[in-house]
Length: 331
Ligand code: TXA
Ligand code: MG
Image 1 (cartoon, rainbow, N blue to C red):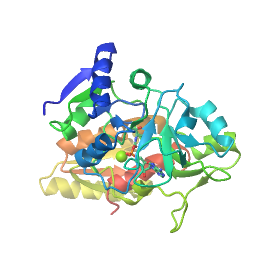
Image 2: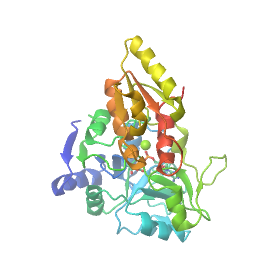
Image 3: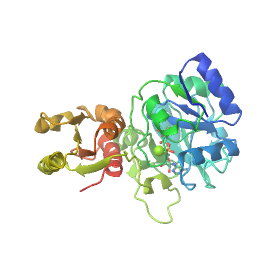
Image 4: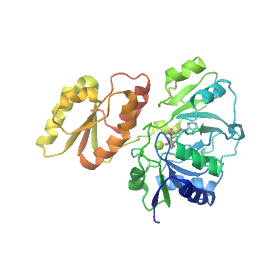
């Protein structure tokens, strides 16, 4: 199959719509990462997503809709904080898991009775969602376990020949996947950390917990149990106070004739002057935005990416460290 990359505009959105409505897959930009979309009410199309990605069949998909879509067609809203969170943080990188009404097919939710709903803010993505006016289920547009794509070319590198169309909406501004919350309980619980932080959710809902995964939980996020986001080269992760260890490993690799790269926040990069660097930026927003981009740049030119962790695990750093701990090996 020939895979076309087209800039997102009225013409390419019309083409994407016709592919999707006839049961095909299209890669789409969002403000977080690129997604691999199918019409969520079409079981055959949904099955293709799992096949193309090599995704475990117990990991449910997120349904994406535009901001004027009535989400109560898809889910039962059992908690008032859902309306508040929706008003405050959507369109944007927040995904809420609620009781499904069964409109989105069982294959997409892996037979479960909940559905994750997201209203993206990326302008091109919204244009497509308004044009199709049906829920599009979309996991990140990478081969399962590989680093999530934040540019059209990243999608192409993973899915070339497997899908007909990639809509190019530029580099994703957010850079890590949406925050996923369980919105069925008395207060929201974060299943996957992201750019909408615990503190932001608390400011609206009063209380918010980070879910610890226990057997028998009503809502689980199967995705969190898999190793994820791995670049194709070797990796090593050190904490912020282990920069000397990172440096020794770097020198060891050089002595072996290998090409190491150090990936770290700009503040820490001072300690590695003159070495091969994959600088992530200064603020947590900048770091989130460049994390996958740098991992995917690194896998092309490095034999090993030596990553240095962020100082604390609050705010957006929680989401960043969640990804870094899964993408790079702690030594
Ligand atoms: O930013 C994003 O969320 C991106 C873009 C494309 O929208 N999508 C994305 O999808 O990251 P995916 O499939 O790579 O990750 C979905 C996460 C997984 O951890 C999955 O387990 C969880 O959401 N999830 C989906 N449906 C769920 C449900 N019904 N209950 C609990 N967790 C769910
Ligand atoms: Mg993913």
